[in-house]
Length: 399
Image 1 (cartoon, one colour):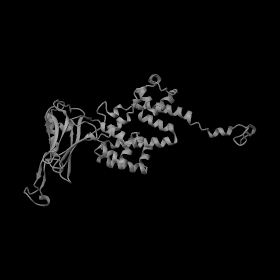
Image 2 (tube, rainbow, N blue to C red):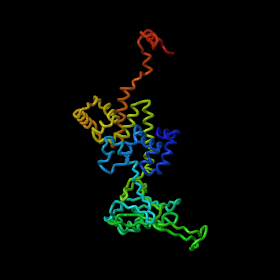
Image 3 (cartoon, one colour):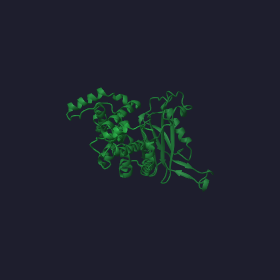
Image 4 (cartoon, rainbow, N blue to C red):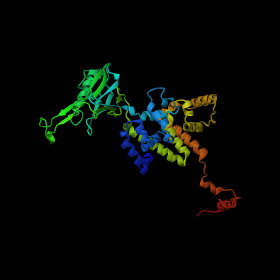
């Protein structure tokens, strides 16, 4: 309910609408950083709002990504940067532009020489998009799963590369003239690596003859030229129960496909910040509810000041020393006294957060109960009732 109210607030609603409408148009790290409104929204969603102006640092996080264990984000102690780099990975749209006379072609990175099992929940779902001329862009969605392959393969549990290629080209053709039929085709590069390339296209209209207007007008697209392009981008699977399978273009979704998850994170961060203005304990509790399950070791707790403050409060731990030995002892104590693995269970995580909230309130929110003011010290005649008045009241009979 609190998140819904937050989402409906005018400023949040405007910022969220802007993000959803524009993130899909960003195709590079530089373009992302250049849009201050988009970038600020994104950093806040991941709790990195303090880094909004550290663009050189964040450019390094984004450009190196997380595919290599030695990338900048993977070498940082704070895994928020890893999550940020994964969410805004602009390499997930694989595209190519045609040279003046050649076709445009995008090539996958995985050999399809082995067979693929589509008898269960495995699915490949991607969008092929091609710019045809200066003003025309067409696309076709390809979905390969148990259902769509049923009539095209001999054994769904052992789908061959040739069968996959045939199924993809069949779906391109069935998309029709209003989409990519005849304008893009799939093929194999050396080693059965899947590739897509632009093709020349001509439609002589309803009359089938050169020239004409209206429904008889001709449509001609060259396979190459400065305007022809082709791109592949993964899209959401047909159902949450499906499992993404890599045919050479990865399985990650581009940022605009992840807009809903980023928006949810932004709302949660906004709520935490708002709550923290009035009560630090509430903000810590909300943060731990969101991030607690990601902490797998005592050092992970120590490495996050907010997580550590929650655990320190629950366990009554003294402040950790700064030496390596002191940190090691504190990490060992945390792992011994807290079942970190249990935080993957939402019920157990919630119980731990409630325990923290109760202790925090007892230690920090100790405002006196107004009723206790009735029993103030008799020496202070301005507050409460003195002993003589109380004794007199006790002698009175009601009714």
